[in-house]
Length: 398
Image 1 (cartoon, rainbow, N blue to C red):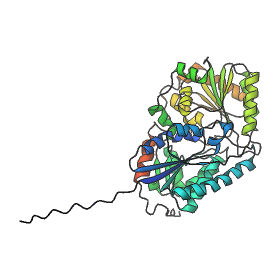
Image 2: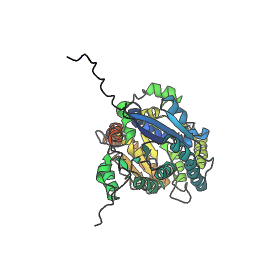
Image 3: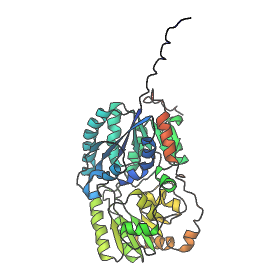
Image 4: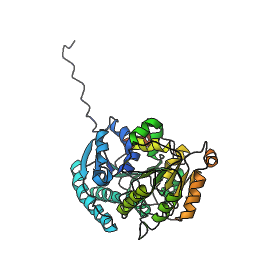
């Protein structure tokens, strides 16, 4: 019998964790990305890197990048790129500055996948850099339509540059496939912002009043208005909204617009409204939980924000969608469309505040999902085969 010591079992090589980079630019996309980031940050096979840029780093827009830090997500780089401008030229230069900063940051860290969301113009920068660096792109919320903003073209460009897609609705998935994307690449996940309703702890009315330092008094109207970037005069539709709000009775809570051309003029006009109209309050930034809690307490929403269409539906909240910015976007029964005309907006708001209208929305479904998007996004990003992901097959010609 041999007394030799058995050889140790061979050591299995450790599989490297998958590097996933996520770009966030503002309060708007961060509220959508929060739960996907939580899923990825807690995954044992993922090394997460967050790249913060644009309005997140601007004092004018509340330095919201600090929220990303407080939430504990690993920030790999902060890209200073937002010009203190109110013009379309400033928007164009912001894209260029972002590309310069991201080229160095993404070259240094070299992720396996880059995750982008939605349709903000500055998202063209990380997508372009990733293309040059041969980094596969995953994109959330492609296949939607908003004909009144350059966002529509940005969204479609990102879709064609991306290699993995997460759509908010089945219709959006079909539209992405119709653009020539291979069906296996396109996943219906739902809108990740809706995960807050299922997974976040919303504030009570009292806690919300304390957080906002106001007393909520019905009827409460939440207003969100952004520049209509497809128009040469991006604020051409705005005055009708402000004129209508002067005529409407109730408490108005106004949130800041996006960092688009004309946004600073809108901020000034909003402050003028608050100065001349009693019980009007303006908020520079509301974090996701505060904003969602507010949606659960207000009586109606008005403006041209996608939130009135995508998120308000989860609360069966009447939303008056004004003008052309969201033209073409899928909407549920809670949305009342109105042209950018003072009389039409007043009539639509009057209808929205009618208790009978809201009672008729009870039990409605939100076409943008049920709050499980983050799980789907994390599952696909952690399991998709990376080899060959960059090479797309052309769609067959009819």
